Amino acid sequence: MKDYRREILYSCMTIVIFSLVPVLFLFTPLRPYTQYYNDPSGHSTLWLIAAFPLMFIIHDTYFYWAHRLMHHRRLFPWFHKVHHLSTNPSPWAAFSFQPLEALVEAGIFPLLLFIMPLTHIHIVVFFAVMMVYNVYGHLGWELYPRWFARHWFGKWINTSFNHNQHHQYFKGNYGLYFLWWDRWAGTIREDYEDKFEAQALK
Image 1 (cartoon, one colour):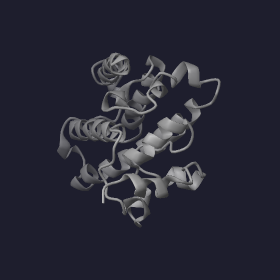
Image 2: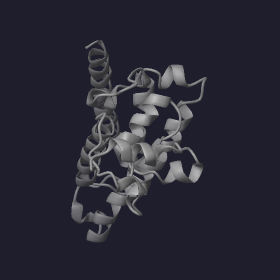
Image 3: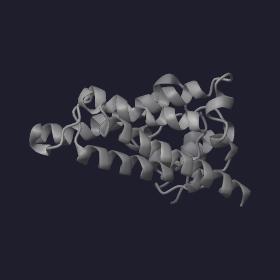
Image 4: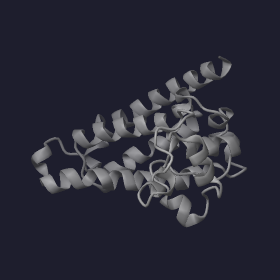
């Protein structure tokens, strides 16, 4: 219960920060400096669709390197320690961040607004998928089937079990949506597939 109270408190603080950042960039004089556009027909239908995978690829890259940096021993106490107080996380831990980490995590929003044209559809879907996948990553149990971690497609997708290992061991498995950075950089745990198969659904 004590863990739940802490996770809920910090998650509420994070949601406030996540809400204020879009307000800062979309409802102040900063807005003209972004590439936000109101009318979905302002760009092609092809771009409207193609922006979605691009957003998540950029976010995954941003998250991996920011997350890995926050594990540096000098930064960890200031940015990431609170999140790792949950060694066997619950869904409430998904956004249990210290305010400094919440600001770092929210930094993806202005980055995307400045580098690519986005409309309200992109923003709503982006935040919805980000929140759902982050909660899934902190379930503490796995939804994907046992064969998924070794499948040609599944081996590149992050799983709840993968992130649970990160919370258990405090090292490795830094990705958010995907595992390509972990695999390319050699930071995925060597026992990931074996333990996934032992824990996941049949």
